[in-house]
Length: 374
Ligand SMILES: C=C1C[C@]23C[C@@]1(O)CC[C@H]2[C@@]12CCC[C@@](C)(C(=O)O1)[C@H]2[C@@H]3C(=O)O
Ligand SMILES: O=C(O)CCC(=O)C(=O)O
Ligand SMILES: [Fe+2]
Image 1 (cartoon, helix red, strand yellow):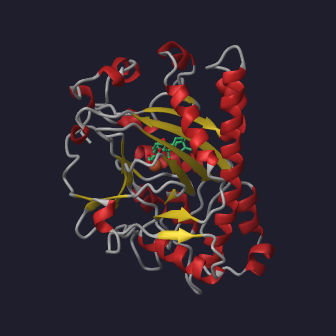
Image 2 (spheres, helix red, strand yellow; image 1 turned 30 degrees about the vertical axis):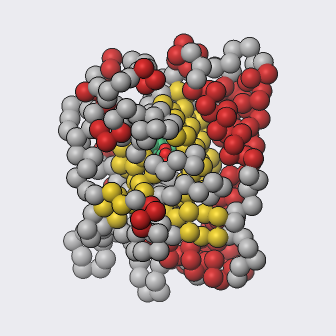
């Protein structure tokens, strides 16, 4: 993206999306249509159909693991169904999130993310790198600190606050349980047996110490959706992200050869799952992180709730022994999540190319390059 970054004044000013009749220059993104977009419905049943992984339905666990491995290797993303999360959770989340973002600007600004902090209302951390603003409002918080975080918004701690927190906590409980189940299926998909998972200290530690960050996105309907972007293209940096989304498509995945954006369908009840860079490292490059973005809609608001799962800040993430071919060295050196974020922050790209800096050259090689995704 072009530099220089947006001025601090423009970056913190509150923008009233609801009254905008046009996309102002501050929110207009060049290059959005450099690659064609492939519609989810048109892609159904063809190469560009986003993979679907069904966790339930009495399916054969080995078949589920195979479907997951394929999706993780070829796309780094998939739709997850048959997960068992009760239907009402998503509807309650949407209702509460719409209420949060509809609060007066002063209430939200009290909880504005301060420089250098992770939690709060405002633009996501990577927004600082762009010279344009995105068509969205966001709120980030550690799933473990919901009650403290939202006292900043609802000072009285009254019924609205309590109801909001209960719904966020319900979602957190469901997502953490689902995330842990999915970790086991990912391990199985790598060829680790249930006995090895039970015996393997690393595998157990990864599952039992998962940390969760929640990010609430509101993409207000946009008068000129072709000129704006809800969330600019990036890869997530953690292990994987479970995304609850309104039944309004918007998430797009970059596919290559030729480059094109594929829109992920948004059937009610399905979660979109996106793999992050540290999962690519953990699986020694076998499973790929997905380069993705969120488009906006001309007719309807869209809400999404990415639930970012990753290691605790102090954990060194290294390729799993089960993912390294016999007789070969691990392809990456160990790294903590905060250290990786610093490496990625210094790298010029917003994708997994920062992983190349952590690659261990093969014997006799000068250095390594991560092969192109997808
Ligand atoms: C856990 C996290 C992942 C994230 C940074 C964060 O601390 C919370 C927000 C996440 C997000 C969402 C939008 C894109 C992104 C790159 C960003 O700047 O903030 C991701 C971060 C990430 O995955 O690296
Ligand atoms: O809105 C979406 O579907 C994607 C959100 C996302 O990629 C993010 O918050 O990191
Ligand atoms: Fe993302």
